[in-house]
Amino acid sequence: MTHIVQDGSARVFAEYNRQSGQFAVRREALKTLPVIDISPFVRESTLDERRRAARELRQVCINIGFFYITGHGIAESELDDVIEWGHRFFGLPHEEKMKLHQSLSPGKQGYVSAGGVNPYAKSAAEPDIKERFAMSRVRLPDEPPGASFNTGEAVWPSPEVLPGFETAMKAHLAKRCNLARRLVRAISLSLELPEDYFDAMYRYMGGTLMYNYYPPADTVAMKETQWNFSPHTDYGVATLLLQDSLGGLQARNADEVWIAVPPMAGTFVVNIGDTLQMWTNDLYVSTLHRVTNASDKARISQPLFTYPHGRTLIECLPTCHSPENPPKYEPVVCEVYNQALVEQAARTGRPGLSKKTAARFKN
Image (cartoon, rainbow, N blue to C red; front, top):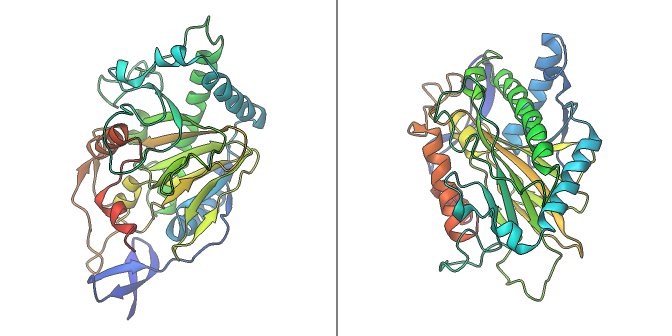
């Protein structure tokens, strides 16, 4: 039984599932991911140009919640430098990295060795084979205390150990956060909301810039159920990922088939997180993804996980519900949801999984 459900000023086809008693949007099972030119939201542009990009974004966020962006305004040479900085950091002596370990950081920033924050804790599953380094943005001059968890609490290797690293990362993080603020304007327009709907929530945005380091493949040592990054969804609103040239990222489409997300020079890969899926009442999908480094070289990626300021109440957006399609989620404070999953990941050495995400592995 198919209905047309009113979604703000836009209409989307929805199928009624008799078993669950809910409406669900019809999603296309993509085999490859689209590339969206985000430049209308970065440069001077007309409203028609921005609406055109927003319509493209809306369709892919309904279908899979994964896409590439170009026209973001950050030079490809800078992206190459960021990858090279990652190799330099993870190439430091172990004792230098351990000086920055997250267990020593009140703000939970810094280095995480293979196996998670506590690799000796018992877990039901083998930990992912990766190292990580987490960084937070600098606190803005007018930012109230506690607006977003971890802001201004990054830890850095000393200039004597890795000269130039802190300066380069702070400058790049500022650019990436500005890009995230532009991206949520596109998301807002795609949802038939005012273009500035999320502006105030993203002024003091929450988020973490994270280096992931995947060592060269050792298929003999890896357990059958072990990954470099096991299947998961992200927790926030949108992730802006920079990946190197080696590949290994996969996303699961609407047919529950894993498709490759190959590297594409000069782009970011964007994927929707749980927070936006809840905000949009399941209109936009937070997609399962995973990583295996099958190369004989170390792989580097660097996601920026973003969400609005931590005290934002996440409840169904006004254009994403109707009498026939009522809100599916109880309101939740943004940072409460995100931090619970971050802490779960720290304990287990694997990504934190919400109950909804964990249930998808049974399908």
